[in-house]
Image (cartoon, rainbow, N blue to C red; front, side, top):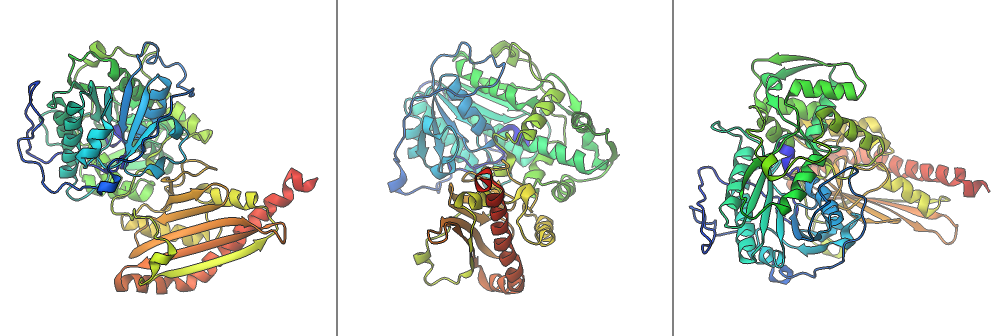
Length: 573
């Protein structure tokens, strides 16, 4: 299902997709190169020559808190691993566990800045580049034992299939040229001899590319992945939380074999030690086969709620069902469509061949309810290691804000405000970094909620995406309908809007010391680059509300910071 790779997070630059319909990939012999039956698309996107060979930071692995009770690190040999998808849901969890298992890890990412605040960044090698650039991919594969391919096109539109096929072919070619010992790809569990959704079909074809590469490859095919922050878990959680009675399509009665994210980590790491004679696709799944309705009610029991009544409807298309999911959960329509499309058939393991290649962990595979329990416990503690929330949004702006001098010649609308305060910089920053999610936006919550609902109705992310951590922010993380573009801890935060607007929008907040008063100054700036006449009319239409919303926001943020300062133990003394 949609969670099986990386929640569509564009790591290593590729927001990549899947192989085109009808394309065959033939097996190659030891002396052959990888060639698809159809010709490669000639116009693969390239990056500038100046960015082809970026600096690689090498730091020896150090201690890291590993999964309690895991068994797959016991007999691991030292390996050198390249991880694509390191900013995604699965990749972001795999990297620290590879380090703990004794691997030296290199990651290939499009934008190294996205890793700026992750706790393991100083312990990996970073190559900045795009999977569509064969030269960079080849350089990244040098002196690597195993390549983990953990990117895919979740939530993408347009001709993503060609892009993902080209990316997979680049990795396959590079792995072969650099004598990589193994490729590990996490694909999707799917039935045979049925018409698959575009996303599932293309992911299967990407697996075929690796199996035809001449490099020993293990294509692990997983279905619904259950873990804190996974798209599959969050969809189940929100549907169950919100709806005591749910009308649902008939696919809620289809059989599904979920797997805990902890067990996915086990299989991925153990795959590096599989004998080179093994090169095949293998299904992985948990110990139970359940219906989607049973999964929802299993969640309800673990969450302390009554079982839900689920009424199956004979007719409800995947598209209509995704609209419903989009409206009643934080999952945006772009992610809901491929997830629901993958539920149209039974999603279970075809066999247990994986057991002969990678034996189950000593403690056994986690049951569905155990996985749900662990996910809920992590969420209670605010310990959301990775999350679907941080997956890139198809069509959302991704270019950074130009520096002020570069605005010359552009139409730019600004709303800039500042307030002097007796609060310390630290207390103002504490409010800034904690903004959004359950804490809200400190001004007219009804207006923010209404704007979020409107955004969801037109297919946007809405305001309910929340935040991954209750107190900390990292570059690249989602924050309601914003994305953290830049953060200078203790002083400056810039957010890029991902809502549906006719233009590009940013919100900046900062705190600087005020030497004269001994307090600080809070700065706030909203920036809007309109797109055509619609963008100009949009700004003018909301201009009357800005005086209320943004002024109230600045005033209440400062007031909250002053309350912190005046009630702190230091102030009291």
